[in-house]
Image 1 (cartoon, helix red, strand yellow):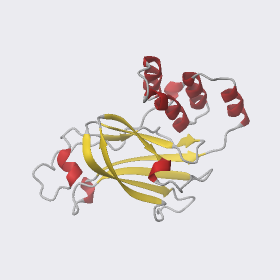
Image 2 (tube, helix red, strand yellow):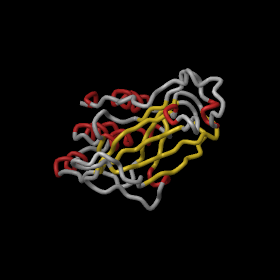
Image 3 (tube, rainbow, N blue to C red):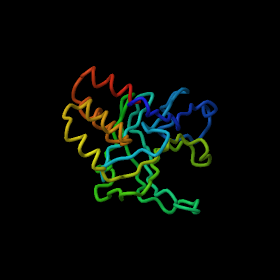
Length: 202
């Protein structure tokens, strides 16, 4: 069941053609030609039960004092195609190792909570050149907060082990909780069983 979720690797892009270009901004000066930035999201809109979920992303190399722009928008409804002003737009100063990273929404914007039933688009952007926005390294995903169904609540009550809880979330299409349930304990342990389960999820 977990394998029904497929990671969408939108946002990965190398920097061929940028080398030697004057005016490159700080973070882009660090990255290699095969650099990739990815959000750990499904191809469809991922669901969460949380008002302030933890978002996950991946970077192919270590970054030191990097500046990434985080943008959260409400996705237009119906016949409206233009985004309104972002509900969150914040520059993050980060030093990270290569691999999976966390982005708790509670730390990005402590007073903000996702509205239930509203679809949001979230973006991470590395701006490379002030005059060439098309060169920006950008990754995009979507998220929607939902209320738990009676069936989900009952299934969660019957399971206590981390990997089983993740499977329950996955079976009910709750992507962000499934990923967070596995990833949170992995940060504090080298449990290979949880790592294998997360690899299957991704």
